[in-house]
Length: 332
Image 1 (cartoon, rainbow, N blue to C red):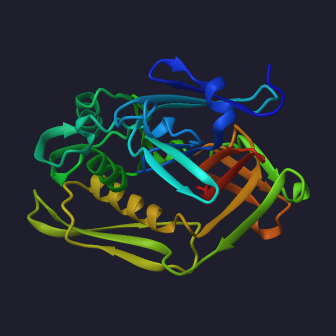
Image 2 (image 1 turned 180 degrees about the vertical axis):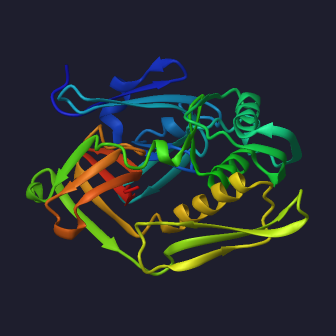
């Protein structure tokens, strides 16, 4: 058993961790909560040129990364498909960086499509698109129905991200799992870990927390054509967390019912207001600090409270294991 943090890397089904470890300069795993694909970077020394020759990685090869903190904590990063093998060098020598994406590049996720979904529920649409890409659907999907939803020259990833942002959901792809879940099922959850200002200089390496009022909205108004009444109807939603924000006016969007209009107004306002409180911190490696987790920032005065991890990067180098985190407000 290794003492201290270590990693396991399975390449094309073969465990190459022990061979790779002496030549590895860094391994990083970036975990995204919404709308972006998780990725890994593995950088190795290439003193004898083998990585440009017999060991050259090929696009489409698969890598499965697991990080161990050495204290019993495990972070199963997942399986990634090679995207951009990159050879470089300078006075410090030659290096090869292997980049992998969690959503397979060989699947139709990246193909632009135009099509329409007629008389279907939101869950049915998301299930269909996920299934076409070999993904299982997870998450709590709101009960919304549509007469027609159009995918307009969009990749499936872009389409599902837009659909999430118009209906009050978060969306991400983790290997063979499509996570499409309501905002209310995530925001306001109990904290999975606490980061205390008292640990600054020990486990907490640095932090930055801020509040902003610019581009935040206390109300959202949607104007839409009621198909039954044949007249324009307005729907208004409020955000109780924002006291002095502007009014977000949403016009020209197709929406078919009061329920869909409310969902659109709430969702657009939520994504605009996500940065009303935000921040970042760098920490001694912590496998619990992953995207989608709620953090209690304690002893930070008026900046204390619940934040959502929007993005985390776990990095292992010869200097040790660190976790860098980007935060957004998690209060309901």
